[in-house]
Image (cartoon, rainbow, N blue to C red; front, side, top):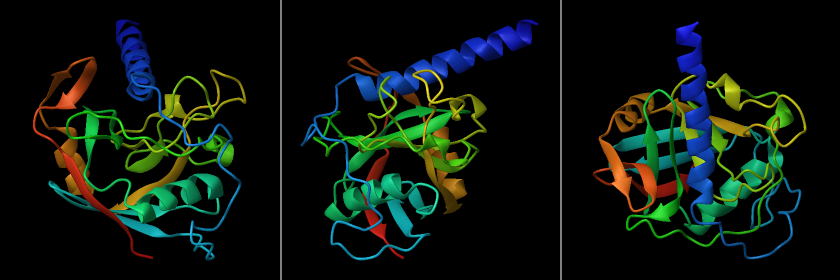
Length: 215
């Protein structure tokens, strides 16, 4: 009984932390409208159903396979950010071992970057927040995801879609790590602390040096 209680409290803290990560400074939108439903890149070319993105970090390289068939809007949104160079030089600003590593929104000085319009939550696509999957971070608004993403470092079932309600939408999975799991495992164990109002921030910057669409 005590174990399950502690587990519930830990999950609640983790979920709250994930929300706070995106809420601490409200993402700046370039447009009030929701990102358009699209299966093409910003250049207007047709996109593969399984594009791959390489994340070159100062801890090593991670290769992500995206699932454009299950999460077309989310993948198109992510690829647009990658293609524009938005993620280059950002940091993994929140790291919680046995939960997730999160990045895509802040520079090394914890200055938040301005983003495009939010994208519709596609967490009802059947993909689960399993270990080594890639998902979108967001605020308490289910459809508020912009640029921040996280890589699950455990099976986080409590983040999955359960119902189209404020509490049930969950977090949209749109890809998975196919190479560089050892790099993810290295990042998840770095020492963390507080920086201003931000918690679980790596003491030494974990930098996403360059994100590249490779396929």
